[in-house]
Image (cartoon, rainbow, N blue to C red; front, side, top):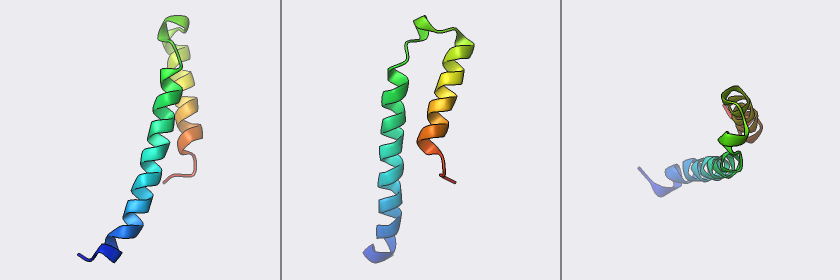
Length: 56
């Protein structure tokens, strides 16, 4: 496989990685002790959807 064939995939992978890091930072900011389990899951789902909306 040629490098030129791999380059578009690398850009997509970098973008996905950056989104995953952003999601991780947001979730780390939610303290589970301050929320019920349902509220925590709801907030994580909302953050996930906002971070990755338009993907796939």
